[in-house]
Length: 304
Ligand code: GLN
Image (tube, rainbow, N blue to C red; front, side, top):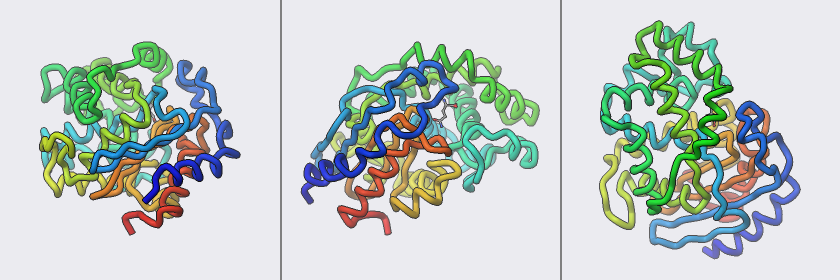
């Protein structure tokens, strides 16, 4: 497979969409990101790295980070995790409050904001220094010890993150948030505020393409069955209320963020990451989804 040619073809075909859509407005630090950026990277289990465009430029990974939090919380609690959070697609926006009332404070799945706030609460209860554990895990899986939190983005979101505070207080009333809300938000907003590029993101998801083992070091992260479950959740819930459309068009498990990043995994082969800050109506990168659709169409490979 000539991935460089495929990336070039995608880059050309996707160009009419680059700069289209809306950069996330509700986080002031993200509203300032130029909308016409586009990068894409492929990292294979065999160690090949291919990239194009702005693939080496850092951006705010936002909800892509929920996969790191989920991996760590699943490792800590095992099957008990599913007593605190569900595993069904929500069919609702990522920051929705309504479903929580009907379902008595148990979020539909770990990848909507409410679910990830529960993960942050679990990490706070189980770990001495969750922010340190999270960033060290990301550095290890991405093979870059310099990856860090972007404090300007974190501070910016802390000021405007009223819905996330509301979700956490609401779940506190159902005893599904057990630590002080400010502490839970601090952990959650920190992992959303990690700054990375496409190459690092694609590489850091390779343990999910490799049955739970980091390919180049052989380090065990998750069991084969646990890795399968996280991939299944990405496929069904990773793009919120656009997850069905993403599975239909792309056919890979993926996770998006409002920073415009999307990472997808092809089990036993590769990780692929895209970045295009212009978002569609569900908060997912417009150019990013198109690029991944072209990727599986041009290569003829998907999980199906
Ligand atoms: N930090 C963002 C929020 O909580 C993450 C949302 C996202 O990337 N979809 O609203």
